[in-house]
Image (cartoon, rainbow, N blue to C red; front, top):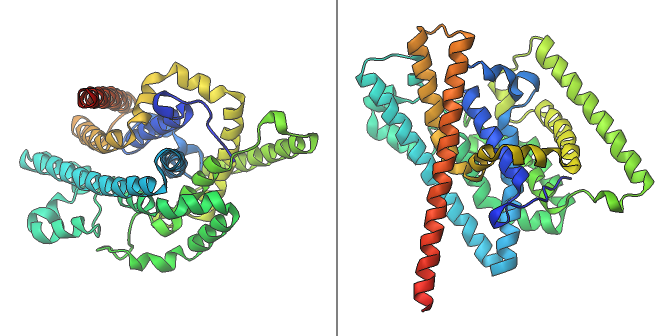
Length: 378
């Protein structure tokens, strides 16, 4: 459906890194209670939020990386790369949990109480550290903001099956994905969970957006130059339909009392999918016009955050948690627009700085590896 054709260093897409950076910043401000900028993010204007974009981009980037590795080194190397990626994501989950517990322990020891501290599970961990620790290790307990990583880990492990299937038989792969999405609530009990409601994100449902992202990378829209008159008319008709659907959901979100509960998100409701697909089509048209590329070129720091997605996500959980707690303590739990905006700006500045530092560290490691290879060659 959509393809981001403008590569950055290393063959990455500038638009993908830009969107990922925007989403990571959005996730941070969305999880700051009292955030002012949070009133202007996706969750305020659409039935879906940044999570859908994050998972879609994960599928898109995975397909790009998998096929590039397979073309250069073979399918075996690509499979092994994503098995290692799954292990990396699992370790990132454990690191995120450890950092949250450490922050929760710090504020508990300082007797500084804020509602968000409880989300770190520090209270239950102090009472039963061995049991709670084992539950976290086996993914049965996923504290505040860490819950997307186990789902993402499963997608990485499944990539050696998903990507080749989508590449060879896209319609069959999409049909299988839709069928799995349809029975996802029935499969949720198969996952380890201490909560009766299960995982925050049911991966059997959310894999649909991951697969859609894979399809969009491997089977993109035809270029304008190859379109006949009928294709142009169909595209314009689809654009009008997508715009109408997006406006309807916008009106529902803004003017209708709408609180469907966590299950609506947990199992990726059809309304969320429909709303996302409508906006995705409109964004695809913007990409084809070059508007997103121009915006990305003007905001290189946001691109840098997206280029270092995993490091910025793990760090972002700490940034949003810390900003939320400090904002609560500073305002007595009654933040105003200005205090909320200051917390937002501080969190965004921290994320941009983390992106720059992560990129600098990555560049340093690559330079050191090149020097090592050069010495070995001589």
